Length: 276
Ligand code: 6GU
Image 1: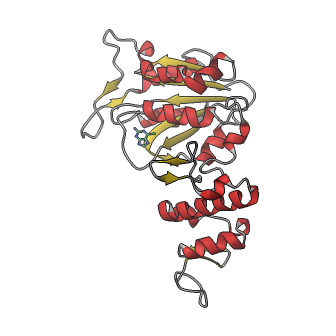
Image 2 (image 1 turned 60 degrees about the vertical axis):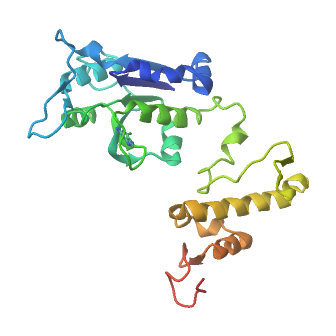
């Protein structure tokens, strides 16, 4: 997979030299290039921003350096036309005004050949850059969640890590990807290691039993309870056909029932359902 990141703070992305993603780059699994947007300015001050039309606080990133940088990333230099045959690269534009980036997004983007991340700063990038980019890229404005960062760089670190670890070969043991949070719409179960007794706190006994069936059931129960307590929004999105009797009993205990083909809060739905 090829990944390009364009930023006025290329050093911010140096964390991508480290750990799993750094190793994947050394192994050639990920070909990641960070480009300094200021290399595509033409004035003495290397200006990338200007005041907003219509007034208001802050500054807006100018279109010309962005068009030149994205043109170069497309491979044909600043005057490059539409891409060659094959799939268009994805242009991810990190922004608190984007669609929320989830594990499903990461899985989707991990299948693509070429991802480009355009890190905005200040109040954002002139919207015409986004419109123009749709001629050359599949454009995806993306947010990490409902809070505001100073720029896209930290968001890109998170997104590249989430995507990169799903590229085959990047995570050594692919089983690690199966039982983690959000793999199946639930939060992960709690984990323990030695010693079996620490500061008067024992590890849950079932985990020492060697009984694989009971351990799997205990873990599944903890996933359901934890998700109901911490992320009720995820419970409401569960597919009831994936829930066995034991799952439904745990959810009922937490105040959720299956009704009308959906998982709903007890009391919120159809007549005749038990109220907690
Ligand atoms: Cl992707 N960018 C910025 N600037 N702020 C954010 C964000 C992204 N996601 C959440 N807040």
